[in-house]
Length: 369
Ligand SMILES: Nc1ncnc2c1ncn2[C@@H]1O[C@H](COP(=O)(O)OP(=O)(O)OP(=O)(O)O)[C@@H](O)[C@H]1O
Image (cartoon, rainbow, N blue to C red; front, side, top):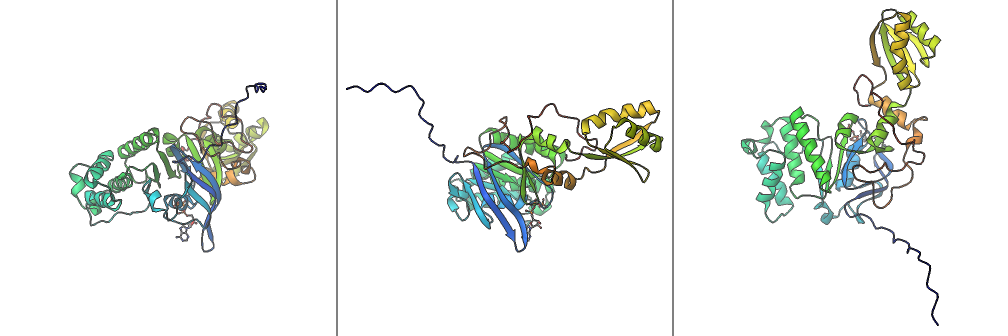
């Protein structure tokens, strides 16, 4: 007897296992005494460049140190692929960390420091590895033989990067890497970070400056007060930060007349007289910045100053986790493949806003949001 042939139904795909160069955090918390530095964070950082954005004290360094195996999570699991990172010496060979704080002995030369790093990793050809790493950060010139304590901040930073790259890790973690660098060094390091990501490595770097993050990373994770506040494509993150009520400080040739015109035109959600000008609350950033010059012109008032009054990072970030912004928290844990590399879609949010359209003009301050 022959069985009737089965209809051509595709076999269900076997569930993909953890990706070997993706770092997974599952409900990770870390506290220091009473201070909760990282609070129940679940995310996956895969190949490509990801920016970890958050204000000072958000928990970025703590998160990076747990990913590098420098700190144990108080609860939850941090793994590289399926392997736990904490106290797993084999895994340390795959990870490089560039710490934020000085971690370079001043009495060593740059070359000695990077070579020592190569030897500590027990690399078979430490000199060749150190030379390759020093070349990557353009430190193979005569300065390599000077003591580190004679280096500029930028040179020290480059030597730290070389030490973290000496064993050619698959995962590179950088804590505020661009701090203290001059513009040329910054551009060079940005290029190096981009190249590392493009070559398939997993690169995560922290910053509190959105502009800096979006120049290098397409995917951004936002941490605020230890919590994972948002996750997505940089356009989406910028939109979340821009589409919130803004408070502007406005000075003009006739503040009272301008206030009356703004109220009559319903251009602003609220206007109040402040010292030396007006404080204007705009509910719709785009509409307000479009309307303000027109309303002023029609009222015969000259604008002297328009500056955001609430552009400090704390207020922008806290919006993301406040009542209004809390809907922007990511949904469930990302899939086993981790976040897409550069160019991929955003990690889905439970209630993600629609795909971002063209970018609105950033606030005049050029601040972080
Ligand atoms: N060793 C420690 N002991 C006690 N509290 C700590 C320790 N390290 C960090 N913290 C606290 O944990 C919180 C998160 O600090 P963390 O350095 O991880 O944040 P961050 O986002 O990297 O900030 P920054 O950019 O200022 O370094 C802060 O409130 C900080 O004061």
